[in-house]
Image (tube, rainbow, N blue to C red; front, side, top):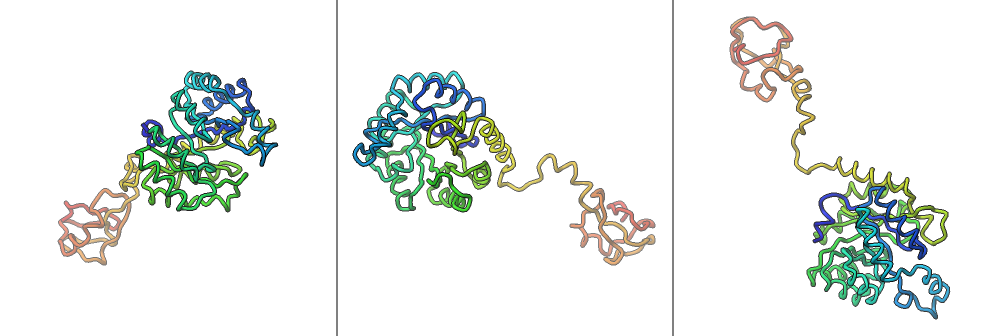
Length: 328
């Protein structure tokens, strides 16, 4: 099932997160705009304050989180709306209750947030569902990542590992994109990039390093209320992201080395043949000092130099003549 989403082309996710501010009208508009911008999927966050924040330790943010709630009915409606707009809808749960909600509405992909990577209870609960999982790795060390991936593998849960730096915004010097090929080799798994940098450059570099998933925050308007709005790409910027990702993807090609079709028409004119460096009389044995190499490749290849040394010419050969086998 994972191959349905990952592996054919870079999978671009518009991270809506909580940028809808609990407003279904905004959420639907985000889905429609993300689809128009070329995103493959749009991801929300399934917020249930009681499984995310301590009301006593974080009373202000607990209260704020109530503005981010989408009900089960909302999720069903948004999923249907996304289907009509040809974009995958999925979400991040933060506990068993929200994960169960998403499972009940048959969400196609689960996202495990960076903050949940040590929550093995939740990871196990989700892994047992056997649906594709995107595991984000912000703030983690390699042992923590290995433990989480181990759970997913134990239950044969298809997964993608997202390299992520959970600072907002992430500076280019902290992006540490060399992690992408390292993780790919270490876990033999598809690797993506959850990009919290400003601009598009880090995502472009991630694709060139082998990222098969790109996730970037998305908003309708950076001036809207909310903690993630200013960090997010607006529709114009997100359209540029998807276009650039797929153009860079085209340049990656294949690790096989051979002349591509467009090169072949230049090959004959740009390669050289063996040619006469001087006038060569008839019946002269060919010596290396008589020869040079000139374009185009319409005669004897330079690779055959040793084969013609010592051969006698059948006729006079003028200086600059491209040599052919019928000269001997």
